[in-house]
Length: 98
Image (tube, rainbow, N blue to C red; front, side, top):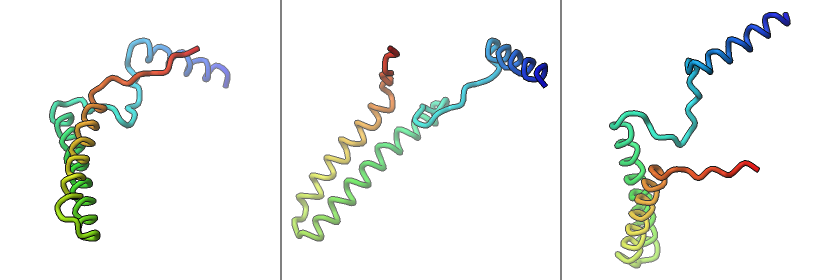
């Protein structure tokens, strides 16, 4: 059984050295195709806008302040969408190993 474990370790090292084993893709990484990147950026902006507009509309109906909260939350949703796309494309800062 020890020979088999040694062989598997050597095989794993050789595959990693040759680049045959791709590292698993984590969440939050960019898609590889230009269409995937565009769709993800669009979804980020659209979803932030929908949430902002929805909250503003509901709060305005509830409090009777039409259109002020709608406009405030529209601007906040727009800013959130832009920040989401900025974070999507900005490089992540990794903590330094000590």
